[in-house]
Image 1 (tube, rainbow, N blue to C red):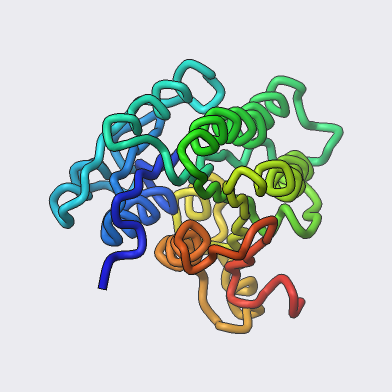
Image 2: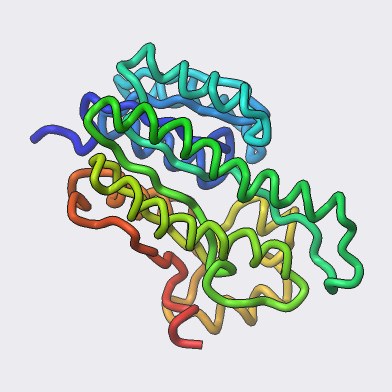
Length: 258
């Protein structure tokens, strides 16, 4: 049987580490050429760079592009890199930061703007660039990595919720706009996934508070990057050929049972 992404090229932002790294590896295992677009080449969790791992464990092509998603030229360079493999067919907007975690009165304007530049502007302009190329190439798939914080409000995370909620509605609007051109646009909403973001940037995993959170999850565990990668693979592939403007929650059942 052919692999799910044979002959396709995916640009994955934030693919050096965590969820993005898992997505890149999963895609390569299904036959996709992968452009790893990230600010850093070395994974935060250690090990070889993602594009090197892809080449070692699969027959897929992979390349690394230094990419700050707030820089339009960098995003253009990532899309240009995909041309070497036939042009972008799949875009995964995964890069993101947690940003300020504080009451709204303590959020500094510069912190807020940086969060929005990375988490919203980066998604918007990467999608803009990819959509133009996909439409001229017969279609494609865009998957935006939002969060359960894009569905529910969490006190002390107001800026993050603002950005991730915006991604959700951006997904639906863009799906309506690009559907006639053969481009599907969907979102995934991860819950607590064991990555550097949840162990270092916003510590949940391994804390007393985190243990209480884990016990409240119906499946009784935190997610792994591979759990999100599998969901993204479904949305990116022809298995989801009639799925667009959709949100897929990957949280072990926590959001809809709390």
